[in-house]
Image 1: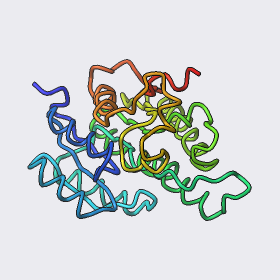
Image 2 (image 1 turned 90 degrees about the vertical axis):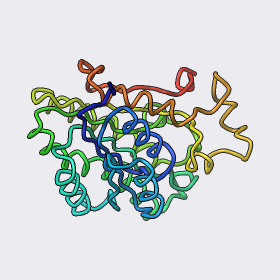
Image 3 (image 1 turned 180 degrees about the vertical axis):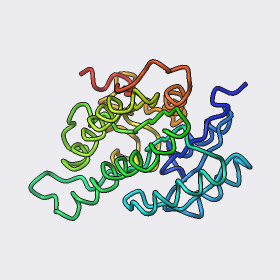
Image 4 (image 1 turned 45 degrees about the vertical axis):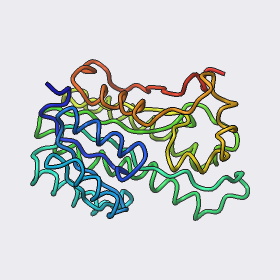
Length: 248
C-alpha cells in the first residue's frame, strides 16, 4: 500500500529537477498529482510518463488567476486537494546588493516568495473542504543562514520569507488539521544548481561536510514524509537537508 494513497497533490515547478523527482515519487506512492510549470513540453511529457494519476497544467506561480485555474482543474480531475508542494523557484543573478537591480530583486521575490503566498492562499480553501492538508514549502539553506555570494540578497530574502510564512500559516490553520512545513535543501544535482557551481561542482563541494551533491530523490524522500500521515504531528518547522552545510 502506498504511503500517499488517497492524497491529491499539486507540485509546482514539476517539469524538471527536484519537482519532477517529487512528482515521480508521489505517483509511485499512490498519490494523484497535478504537475505545474511554465515549461509545457517537459511538463506534459512527464505527466504522460506518469500515467492516469498525473495531470499537467501550465502555470505561472506569480499570477493569482493562474493559481485559480490550477486549483479548478485539479479539483475537477481528482477532487479536493490535500497536499501542496510549493517547489517552483529561481536563483537570480549572482550579484552584490548595490549591483542588484530593482527588476532583478522583484523577479526573484515574485517567484520564490509571492508564488508561495498565492499557492497557500489558493489551495487552503480546498484543504478546508477536505478536512485535512499538508503544505510543503521548498525554501533553501540560505533561508536559514545567509551564504555570501549565493547568489544574492533577493534569493536570501525570499527564502527567509518562505520560512516565516510557513510558520505563520501553520499556526493559523493547525486547528483545521492543515500542517505547513518548510524544507531547506543544500546543494542538489539539478539544472538550477548548475548555475551556482563550477563545472566540476568544486565550489559546492568545499562547503559540504559529506563532500557530495545530493540526488533530487533524497530531497523527495523528505518531502514525501512531510506530505504523508507519517508526519502527522509535525508542523511549523523547518527541515534541513544540507549534508551539514549549515552547521559550520
